[in-house]
Length: 236
Image (cartoon, rainbow, N blue to C red; front, side, top):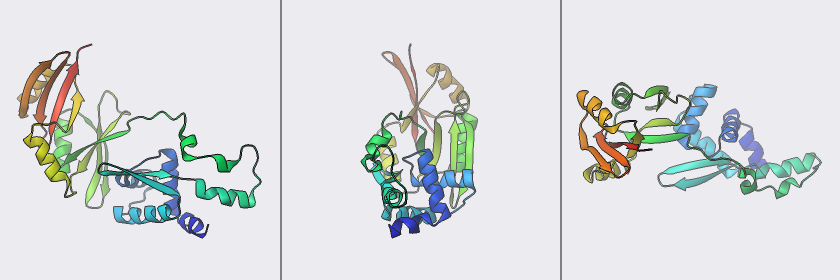
Protein backbone atom coordinates (compact mmCIF):
# COMPACT_ATOMS: atom_id res chain seq x y z
CA UNK A 1 0.00 0.00 0.00
CA UNK A 2 2.94 2.36 0.67
CA UNK A 3 4.05 2.03 -2.96
CA UNK A 4 0.57 3.05 -4.11
CA UNK A 5 0.54 6.17 -1.94
CA UNK A 6 4.05 7.08 -3.10
CA UNK A 7 3.02 6.67 -6.74
CA UNK A 8 -0.09 8.81 -6.28
CA UNK A 9 1.79 11.57 -4.43
CA UNK A 10 3.17 12.98 -7.68
CA UNK A 11 0.94 15.26 -9.80
CA UNK A 12 2.38 14.07 -13.12
CA UNK A 13 1.72 10.44 -12.23
CA UNK A 14 -1.86 11.27 -11.23
CA UNK A 15 -2.30 13.04 -14.57
CA UNK A 16 -0.98 9.98 -16.40
CA UNK A 17 -3.62 7.87 -14.65
CA UNK A 18 -6.26 10.45 -15.62
CA UNK A 19 -5.22 10.14 -19.26
CA UNK A 20 -5.25 6.34 -19.14
CA UNK A 21 -8.71 6.52 -17.58
CA UNK A 22 -9.80 8.73 -20.46
CA UNK A 23 -8.30 6.37 -23.06
CA UNK A 24 -6.73 3.13 -21.93
CA UNK A 25 -3.95 1.35 -23.81
CA UNK A 26 -1.54 4.11 -24.88
CA UNK A 27 2.08 4.03 -26.01
CA UNK A 28 4.71 6.14 -24.25
CA UNK A 29 4.83 8.49 -27.23
CA UNK A 30 1.07 9.07 -27.12
CA UNK A 31 1.05 9.60 -23.34
CA UNK A 32 3.79 12.23 -23.70
CA UNK A 33 1.84 13.98 -26.45
CA UNK A 34 -1.40 14.07 -24.43
CA UNK A 35 0.41 15.41 -21.36
CA UNK A 36 2.01 18.14 -23.46
CA UNK A 37 -1.04 19.14 -25.49
CA UNK A 38 -3.72 18.90 -22.77
CA UNK A 39 -1.81 19.74 -19.59
CA UNK A 40 1.24 21.70 -20.68
CA UNK A 41 3.59 19.09 -19.20
CA UNK A 42 6.62 19.19 -21.46
CA UNK A 43 8.60 16.47 -19.69
CA UNK A 44 11.00 14.34 -21.72
CA UNK A 45 10.04 10.84 -22.77
CA UNK A 46 12.69 9.52 -20.39
CA UNK A 47 11.08 11.36 -17.45
CA UNK A 48 7.59 10.12 -18.34
CA UNK A 49 8.97 6.60 -18.77
CA UNK A 50 10.37 6.79 -15.22
CA UNK A 51 6.96 7.91 -13.90
CA UNK A 52 5.36 4.95 -15.69
CA UNK A 53 7.92 2.62 -14.09
CA UNK A 54 6.86 3.88 -10.63
CA UNK A 55 3.18 3.38 -11.48
CA UNK A 56 3.88 -0.10 -12.83
CA UNK A 57 5.89 -1.04 -9.72
CA UNK A 58 2.89 0.02 -7.60
CA UNK A 59 0.60 -2.10 -9.76
CA UNK A 60 -1.40 0.90 -10.97
CA UNK A 61 -0.27 0.47 -14.57
CA UNK A 62 0.04 -2.73 -16.56
CA UNK A 63 1.86 -3.07 -19.88
CA UNK A 64 1.48 -5.28 -22.89
CA UNK A 65 3.88 -5.45 -25.81
CA UNK A 66 2.52 -5.94 -29.32
CA UNK A 67 5.26 -6.08 -31.93
CA UNK A 68 7.46 -3.04 -31.49
CA UNK A 69 4.85 -1.16 -29.45
CA UNK A 70 4.39 -1.22 -25.68
CA UNK A 71 0.89 -0.29 -24.50
CA UNK A 72 0.04 0.97 -21.01
CA UNK A 73 -3.22 0.20 -19.18
CA UNK A 74 -4.58 1.51 -15.89
CA UNK A 75 -5.19 -1.06 -13.15
CA UNK A 76 -7.34 0.09 -10.22
CA UNK A 77 -7.08 -3.17 -8.28
CA UNK A 78 -4.37 -1.84 -5.88
CA UNK A 79 -6.79 0.93 -4.85
CA UNK A 80 -9.40 -1.50 -3.56
CA UNK A 81 -7.68 -2.23 -0.19
CA UNK A 82 -7.57 1.52 0.42
CA UNK A 83 -11.30 1.82 -0.22
CA UNK A 84 -12.03 -1.20 1.94
CA UNK A 85 -9.89 0.14 4.75
CA UNK A 86 -11.70 3.46 5.20
CA UNK A 87 -15.00 3.21 3.37
CA UNK A 88 -17.83 0.76 3.83
CA UNK A 89 -18.62 -1.16 0.71
CA UNK A 90 -22.16 -1.11 -0.54
CA UNK A 91 -23.74 -3.20 -3.25
CA UNK A 92 -21.53 -5.52 -5.24
CA UNK A 93 -18.20 -6.48 -3.72
CA UNK A 94 -15.59 -4.22 -5.33
CA UNK A 95 -13.03 -7.00 -5.04
CA UNK A 96 -14.89 -9.05 -7.63
CA UNK A 97 -14.32 -6.50 -10.36
CA UNK A 98 -11.58 -7.58 -12.74
CA UNK A 99 -9.93 -5.75 -15.58
CA UNK A 100 -11.76 -7.93 -18.11
CA UNK A 101 -15.14 -7.14 -16.56
CA UNK A 102 -14.36 -3.43 -16.56
CA UNK A 103 -13.68 -3.64 -20.26
CA UNK A 104 -16.93 -5.35 -21.25
CA UNK A 105 -19.16 -3.33 -23.50
CA UNK A 106 -16.37 -1.04 -24.73
CA UNK A 107 -16.26 -0.72 -28.51
CA UNK A 108 -12.68 -0.77 -29.77
CA UNK A 109 -11.78 1.76 -32.44
CA UNK A 110 -8.66 2.89 -34.26
CA UNK A 111 -7.62 6.26 -32.88
CA UNK A 112 -4.07 6.51 -34.24
CA UNK A 113 -2.01 4.85 -36.94
CA UNK A 114 1.67 5.48 -37.59
CA UNK A 115 3.96 5.76 -40.57
CA UNK A 116 7.70 5.72 -39.77
CA UNK A 117 9.52 8.56 -41.50
CA UNK A 118 13.20 9.45 -41.78
CA UNK A 119 12.59 13.23 -41.78
CA UNK A 120 9.57 14.71 -40.01
CA UNK A 121 9.72 18.10 -41.76
CA UNK A 122 9.95 16.51 -45.20
CA UNK A 123 7.20 14.07 -44.29
CA UNK A 124 4.89 16.83 -43.10
CA UNK A 125 5.33 18.69 -46.39
CA UNK A 126 4.78 15.56 -48.48
CA UNK A 127 1.73 14.30 -46.60
CA UNK A 128 0.03 17.72 -46.54
CA UNK A 129 1.16 19.58 -49.65
CA UNK A 130 1.35 16.56 -51.96
CA UNK A 131 -0.98 13.88 -50.64
CA UNK A 132 -3.49 16.41 -49.32
CA UNK A 133 -3.80 15.46 -45.66
CA UNK A 134 -4.45 18.17 -43.08
CA UNK A 135 -2.07 18.84 -40.19
CA UNK A 136 -3.68 18.34 -36.77
CA UNK A 137 -0.84 18.30 -34.22
CA UNK A 138 2.76 19.47 -34.20
CA UNK A 139 4.02 19.34 -30.62
CA UNK A 140 7.72 19.53 -29.61
CA UNK A 141 8.81 16.33 -27.86
CA UNK A 142 12.46 16.92 -27.08
CA UNK A 143 14.57 15.87 -30.04
CA UNK A 144 11.50 15.02 -32.13
CA UNK A 145 7.85 16.14 -32.45
CA UNK A 146 4.40 14.63 -32.14
CA UNK A 147 3.06 15.29 -35.63
CA UNK A 148 -0.31 13.97 -36.78
CA UNK A 149 -2.30 14.51 -39.96
CA UNK A 150 -5.90 13.71 -40.78
CA UNK A 151 -8.14 13.48 -43.81
CA UNK A 152 -9.71 16.90 -44.50
CA UNK A 153 -12.99 15.02 -45.01
CA UNK A 154 -12.81 13.62 -41.47
CA UNK A 155 -10.79 16.03 -39.27
CA UNK A 156 -11.94 14.31 -36.07
CA UNK A 157 -11.28 10.82 -37.38
CA UNK A 158 -8.22 8.57 -37.27
CA UNK A 159 -4.95 10.49 -36.99
CA UNK A 160 -1.83 9.41 -38.86
CA UNK A 161 1.32 9.89 -36.75
CA UNK A 162 4.43 10.90 -38.70
CA UNK A 163 6.66 9.01 -36.29
CA UNK A 164 10.47 9.30 -36.45
CA UNK A 165 12.14 6.02 -37.43
CA UNK A 166 14.92 6.40 -34.86
CA UNK A 167 14.84 2.89 -33.40
CA UNK A 168 17.79 0.86 -34.78
CA UNK A 169 15.48 -2.03 -35.70
CA UNK A 170 13.23 0.14 -37.85
CA UNK A 171 15.51 1.09 -40.75
CA UNK A 172 16.39 -2.52 -41.74
CA UNK A 173 12.68 -3.36 -41.53
CA UNK A 174 11.74 -0.46 -43.80
CA UNK A 175 14.56 -1.20 -46.25
CA UNK A 176 13.46 -4.84 -46.50
CA UNK A 177 9.88 -3.80 -47.28
CA UNK A 178 11.00 -1.36 -49.97
CA UNK A 179 13.39 -3.92 -51.47
CA UNK A 180 10.51 -6.36 -51.85
CA UNK A 181 8.11 -3.68 -53.10
CA UNK A 182 5.81 -4.04 -50.09
CA UNK A 183 3.78 -0.96 -49.06
CA UNK A 184 4.03 0.11 -45.42
CA UNK A 185 0.34 1.05 -45.37
CA UNK A 186 -2.59 1.81 -47.67
CA UNK A 187 -4.81 4.86 -48.14
CA UNK A 188 -8.25 4.85 -49.72
CA UNK A 189 -9.00 7.15 -52.67
CA UNK A 190 -12.09 7.64 -54.80
CA UNK A 191 -10.30 7.13 -58.13
CA UNK A 192 -6.87 5.50 -58.24
CA UNK A 193 -6.16 6.44 -61.86
CA UNK A 194 -7.12 10.09 -61.36
CA UNK A 195 -5.02 10.28 -58.18
CA UNK A 196 -2.13 8.62 -60.00
CA UNK A 197 -2.27 11.27 -62.73
CA UNK A 198 -2.52 14.11 -60.18
CA UNK A 199 0.42 12.89 -58.11
CA UNK A 200 2.57 12.12 -61.15
CA UNK A 201 2.01 15.72 -62.20
CA UNK A 202 3.42 16.81 -58.82
CA UNK A 203 6.55 14.72 -59.34
CA UNK A 204 5.62 11.73 -57.18
CA UNK A 205 7.42 8.51 -58.11
CA UNK A 206 5.30 5.37 -58.40
CA UNK A 207 6.69 1.85 -58.13
CA UNK A 208 3.40 0.33 -59.32
CA UNK A 209 1.07 1.91 -61.84
CA UNK A 210 -2.72 1.57 -61.35
CA UNK A 211 -3.54 -2.13 -61.44
CA UNK A 212 -6.94 -3.79 -61.41
CA UNK A 213 -7.14 -6.68 -58.96
CA UNK A 214 -10.69 -7.86 -59.30
CA UNK A 215 -12.90 -5.43 -57.39
CA UNK A 216 -9.87 -3.45 -56.12
CA UNK A 217 -7.62 -1.06 -58.04
CA UNK A 218 -4.26 -0.19 -56.48
CA UNK A 219 -1.11 1.78 -57.14
CA UNK A 220 2.05 2.19 -55.05
CA UNK A 221 4.05 5.39 -54.52
CA UNK A 222 7.28 6.44 -52.82
CA UNK A 223 6.60 8.86 -49.94
CA UNK A 224 10.23 10.22 -50.10
CA UNK A 225 10.63 9.34 -46.40
CA UNK A 226 11.64 5.71 -46.71
CA UNK A 227 8.25 4.10 -47.34
CA UNK A 228 6.16 2.72 -50.14
CA UNK A 229 2.50 3.68 -49.77
CA UNK A 230 -0.41 2.02 -51.53
CA UNK A 231 -3.47 3.92 -52.71
CA UNK A 232 -6.53 1.81 -53.34
CA UNK A 233 -10.17 1.92 -54.33
CA UNK A 234 -12.65 -0.90 -53.95
CA UNK A 235 -15.58 -0.87 -56.32
CA UNK A 236 -18.93 -0.69 -54.54
